[in-house]
Image 1 (tube, rainbow, N blue to C red):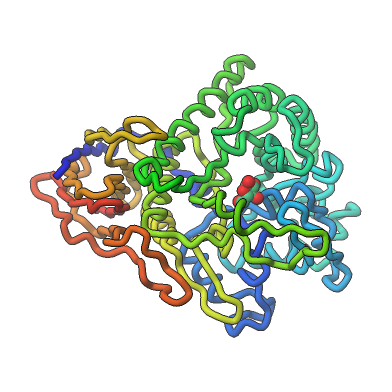
Image 2 (cartoon, helix red, strand yellow):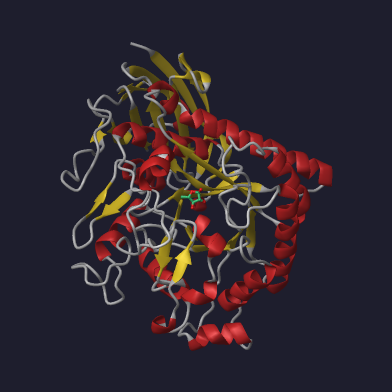
Amino acid sequence: MPEAHLTIDPHFAVGPIDRRLFGGFVEHLGRHVYDGIYEPGHPTADEEGWRTDVIELVRELGVDTIRYPGGNFVSGFRWEDSVGPREQRPRRLDLAWHSTETNEVGLHEFSSWLEKVGSELMLAVNLGTRGTAEALDLLEYSNIAGGTALSDLRREHGRDRPFGVKMWCLGNEMDGPWQLGHRNAEDYGKIAIQTARAMRQVDPDIELVVCGSSSAQMPTFGEWERTVLEHTYEAVEFISCHAYYEEYDGDLDSFLASAVNMDRFIETVVATADHVKALKKSDKTVNISFDEWNVWYITRFENVDKVAGLDNWPVAPRLLEDVYSVADAVVFGNLMISLLKHADRVTSASLAQLVNVIAPIMTEPGGPAWRQTTFFPFSITSRLARGKALELKLDAPTYATDRHGEVPLVDAVATHDEETGQSAVFLVNRSADEDVTLTIDVARLGHVSVLEAHTLSDDDIYARNTLEDPERVAPHQNGSASIDSGVLTITLPPVSWTALALG
Ligand code: AHR
């Protein structure tokens, strides 16, 4: 049986964990909003039409800031359509997803939902079909108390207090040829700095995210980040990263090591941002907003799901409804480990997405809501990862992959909360068929015991939770964890994700 060893020292910190690392993303896409979070007439719907069963699950998930309203959707969105009396709101073509947007849910309604789930709003502006003026209008409408045309309009629309939106994305995936208004890095850099400077003149306290690459596989990756940051460095707090992973052609070994790609992606963008920092002789550090990440079977969307046709613009079609397996959840948990390992520079992240659309929560119209396999690593990590992320000393065997080269069999991160004295360790065993015995030197944490030990694994690594069998997969208590003389020993089953709480 392979063996691995880990040493934890609470003094060796990577950095504090920003709660915004546990953010989400709600896009007007498929059945995310309509028939997802919003379904008037559903037996659990409240007086505003929100499904309360979904609200409870989102709360349990533990999501901090939520990015809205897209995604690709935002690049054709006119925000004014989504405010004011509902009966006067126009129905529009959504070109990104070839759907009809009814605008029944807009800024005011979504904000009210966020209050119910206990999350903050992060807004994206449209820099695809629109520009600086419309971004300024939306900011004035959202953040100015009153006494101007647009702030008073908001008040007329029933919202006296400003929305007070702190984080703003300057467009979405502008490097992607599929994006409405796609630009090259030079052109995007110019409109982004112009918009950023203008938005700051309205509200100097906002935090701005400039678009990085849509993935590390984009042909312009690296050059895009450098050029865009050379234009915008002084005016933005974050550059975005987006990454989706899937199992290609049955290559499970590479898929299980997807987080290695995320590690390298983050480190490359950090290096590029710091290169621009040096060029600018700046004291300021630009961090990463990893504002789209997940497992997503994009090839299935391209080949099966896509809507088309001049007379076919459905409302809330079933799109991107991936049903996640245990293996997907293990990779997903590993992506969270990667984010935490880089907590010093990844200070905001948004799981893409939340409900029905590549989501940890699924719903059926008129029917139940349930947890996908990926729900568990998110909810447990969000609950246990507190305080600061720690540097670890990990010794583990390696294995060969086609996509990522030689990679460690085990990946891990630990966190420590000085206020409570509690620590947490998150682990994956990437082996497709072997248990790993892991020993962890916990002596430097003092006299600790194992408070919780959750493992997600299954004899069938492709087992899923479905409408017919919504509780097929759930984490189990890992009874193998024990501590003796400052050394914790635990068995990690093949293709597994584990979380330990120590205190
Ligand atoms: O999350 C789904 C889509 O993926 C988003 O709309 C887009 O930004 C990305 O390509």
